[in-house]
Image (cartoon, rainbow, N blue to C red):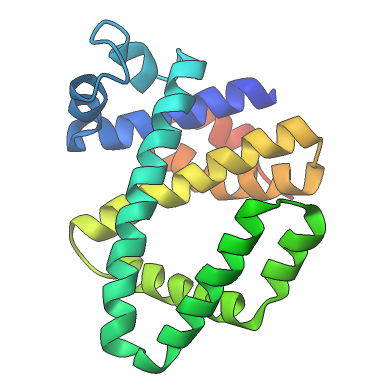
Length: 187
């Protein structure tokens, strides 16, 4: 199966899962997608518009998650607040002069790795919880698969492509994309 059609299928799955949860109304009322185009976006037929919409929603949800994470960190891991401050300082210094070496330095920074580990712990708590937060964390998960597919396609990264396909297959089964579920199996 081609990468483009696989991404369109994933966009359709995301649209089907989240459109009635308010995503359809959000994209029209925010002015990101015109009312006449919203059906095509939700069905995965308007690729560029759909990717643009989902990137914006993904960023907004991540910002909300980070806001909740900061509150959670202040109540449950007060001793790690110093790591948050150091991580933000390190990230701020890289934002002024972006280079691959600086990015590697950030990724190896102990404060940044500690904060990222705690953020993963927080999102796992949200994911395992019940309610609306757990539902929308699955949106973040599905978007990471989509963004991974896009990156794998652009960079020619076969291992990343296979990992994203592996993460996509259960959603294909759940949302009745039988051909993709059947023929995209990982052996």
